Amino acid sequence: MDFPQQIKQQSCMDCLSGQSLGFEIRMAFQPIIDWSVQDIIGYEALVRGPEGQGAGWVFEHINDSNKYYFDQACRVKAIEAASRLGLKKLLSINFLPNAVYNPETCIRATIEAGDLFGFDITQIMFEVTEGEQIIDQTKLKRIFESYAKRGFITAIDDFGAGYSGLAWLTSLRPAVLKLDMGLIRDIDKDSVKQAVLKGILAVCCELGTKFWPRGLRAKLNWITWSPAVSIGIRAITLPNLNWKSC
Image (cartoon, rainbow, N blue to C red; front, side):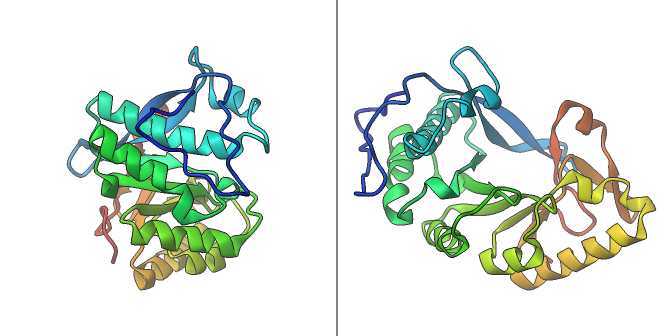
């Protein structure tokens, strides 16, 4: 993939090679559903290969020499494709924190893409997976702070799947927290999981972090499976916690 001519590849001495990936990337969009209103409120951008190959195929072609370009290309491609398809709602983009060298420098292409394709950057949510190996957590905190100041939404995905726990949550202070399904699977039958979730919710309330379950919807007092799970759609409904903090 090559960058549109109107978007400058913002370089820093340590990061940008200026090379092309050598192959095209495409984007698939998974809808994010608010079951309280039965409506799509946004989309998650998922990278695909030139012929629709899955993310695994794509990442087999990513290495230390091109990961920065790949991270930038995914952002620009997601914004371009969402805009072209008229998906001008919340746009969730996964990013590679280890590929970001200087937050202010690395975000410029994203801002320029928003301007070029007419996409409101305050509708863009950058998320990082909790289970990802983070080389420098202090730098990740700086990235989150910088993105939030620019008007982007920050998120931790699959929280509970990794090992960093509440310390990571309180350090990064994301705008949105998405729980790993393993943490809340059968939670209505598991008192230990209920206690853990109550603790996470308490921290979210203190931080003003919005809480999203993943692939689930509310039923009675605890979260249970939604029919949406079978087709991979995310629901974000909880009692008194629908897309808002406490």
